[in-house]
Image (tube, rainbow, N blue to C red; front, side):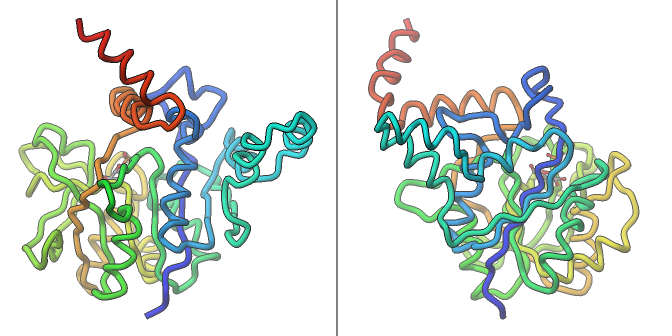
Length: 292
Ligand code: G1P
């Protein structure tokens, strides 16, 4: 089976939960300490061996393209004033061996439609999908979630979604999976439903924004119609594909922060702030003063 080298980042979403902050800037450019969310997502992919980054963008998302491009004036200014460390940080956002491909999603028709926009570039290959607002902090000393899923794909040869248990009252926010235990941290999936109500949900195992998919998913995406919320849902295409091909659910060991929500975003900012090389110690002592 082919090695996974492509990652799809659907970044066309409006970010309405963060208005007015996202009125004129993409939600994926919100920063956790000193890096935008999309950069963390890209770093996770690059660490997993991905060499082609495919961004599904939309209107008002230019800042993402600029972020991964050369910034001539800024670099010239930093070089002229000998700010070497800062210069390196803007120059080396991604390694030279990695390429960025941008595809416009012409209308906000949902996650499934966004992924389908990647078909001309992905073709038949297996690929990963990363939702940048699901911020994943790897367990100490452990590979990140995408790395783990890519590795599992190489041995299991099955498509895969990342899952975690959520409180039953939250099932309406997620794709919900049911399955049977297969191996450590893995379930063989038997069903997946987009955003069921708590009373209808078959389980509380929720999909978070990491998927390993096979190129075959595109033909299912083309066939399914509109689903939950009147959008073309990736979940529905997975449900259709599961009838013909095996799917696994991977209980990841990273900590996941829902950075599409204010609370999750603040939690991630605090944790990353406390771990930050430059400000971590001082920030942690400041937090302790707030406890009184
Ligand atoms: C999307 C998917 C959903 C998944 C979630 C993970 O929903 O449609 O199945 O559980 O991402 O974050 P959204 O958050 O875009 O509404």
